[in-house]
Length: 151
Image 1 (tube, rainbow, N blue to C red):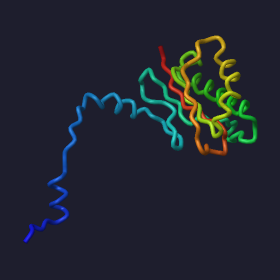
Image 2 (cartoon, rainbow, N blue to C red; image 1 turned 180 degrees about the horizontal axis):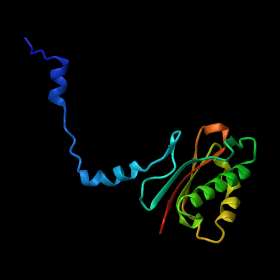
Image 3 (cartoon, one colour; image 1 turned 120 degrees about the vertical axis):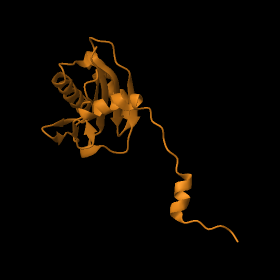
């Protein structure tokens, strides 16, 4: 007859160990120590020269402006980004390295182009990605994720 093994014996025979070079993960551990999270979104990562801003919504005093036009929502989200940058070592739009714009209506990308260009008018436009999403917190039509760097 066949050999029978228990589930525990079976798992231990197939268990593999993952080798992780501690030097490779040390920086991310150091960065995580300084991360301040609000809800599901982090606002800052450690003492690195990179700054990550996620989940920037078109909100004023905690109220999402979901009843406003996409241009006004995007402009308000950029105002909030500008404020977050200033609060973070006096960074500016010139420090933005990449901008991800999440839209519930991807066809609105053209409508926000003039706002984007006008807000970054005196500096080189940072690379951006426009992503279509099904929904955003608070019924917003736009949300920003941004990487900035202190250079």
